[in-house]
Image 1: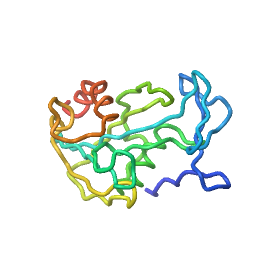
Image 2: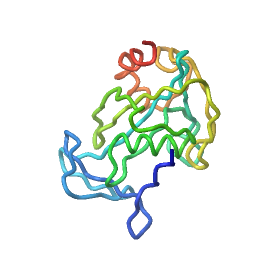
Image 3: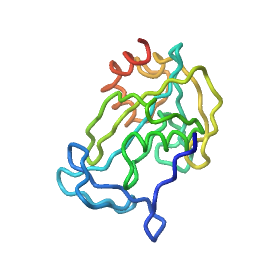
Length: 181
């Protein structure tokens, strides 16, 4: 399997996002990451992926010091780029941030969350066993494998970012069903 391509950029080397409606359908224009332009009812797609083992261990990554929420934990995540489907973005972000590569059909939808200007799609993908991760410099500076309960039960022993704590509260039951089936 080959690594998914990186995001396309405009002539300023800035990431471009498709603008979508509440159903995730493109509205026919793009916006720049550094200067997003959304009308009411418009969004961009953001994705996150929970990688898990058959024993219920999940991969969490720590955000680099250069990022917002530095030193806090999350599941691999990022924005879908212009022309990229949600699941393609999940595949690309996971490969970029961790070096882990999976076929598109291995990504199981967990749920879609509605945020102020983002449709946040969460996926789960199973790996046969705990694996070594290659953190992407500037994005991820550490990783660890933890039991699912450490990541989603209260109190959480993993110091997730505030946005991820809110997301986990919303999807924890669906995620538990997939990981613990």
